[in-house]
Image (cartoon, rainbow, N blue to C red; front, top):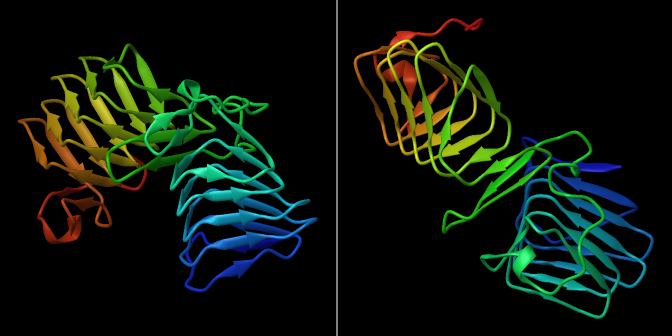
Length: 242
C-alpha cells in the first residue's frame, strides 16, 4: 500500500499501483487502473479517473470531478460532477457540487458517513462553507452542551457551553463557541467564528474570529489564532496536560 501524507503532498499526476491512500493532497489528479484501489481521506485536485475494474473511495475532497468507469463510493465532497458508465454510490451526507447526496438520485453507499472511514474521522470544509464528515457525527443545529461533550466530527451552527459543562473539540466547530462562567472548553481541532469565553478555555488548535470574554484563556504555543502562532500573542500558556 502506498500513502501520500499526512505531511507530504504530490504535485504531479498520479497513477495508482495496486492500492493508494491519499491523506494529504495530490494536486494533479489521480488515475485508478483496473485491479487498483484509491482511498482519499485528504484531497485530490485535478480530478479522479477510474478505469473499468478499478475502485475509488472518497472520504475527503475531490476537485475536478470524478470520471468513473469502474466503482466509486463517495462519502465526502466532490466539485466538478461525477460522470462515466461505472457503478457510483453516494452517501446521503456527501456533497456533490454543493448538494447533499440525499437530494440526488445516486445509489446509496453501503455505509452511513458515521460508520465509514475504518475508524478514522475526516472533516472536509469546502470554499463555500459546506461540510462533510466521515467517521464521526455532523451536527447541523445549534448545540448546548449538557455535562460533557466531545466533537470529533463537526458542528456547523455554533456551540454554547453552560456552567458546569465541558466541551472537547478534536474536530471542527463553525459558528463559534460561547463559554459561560463556570463552563470549560478544550480545543484541539478548529473553531471558525471565534470564542467568547467567560469561563475557562484551553486552546491548542486553530481559531478564526478571535478570542474574547472575561474568562481564563490559556493558549498552547503552537495554536493558531487568526493566522498567528499563539507564542507571538502573549496569552497565558496552556499546559500539555490540559
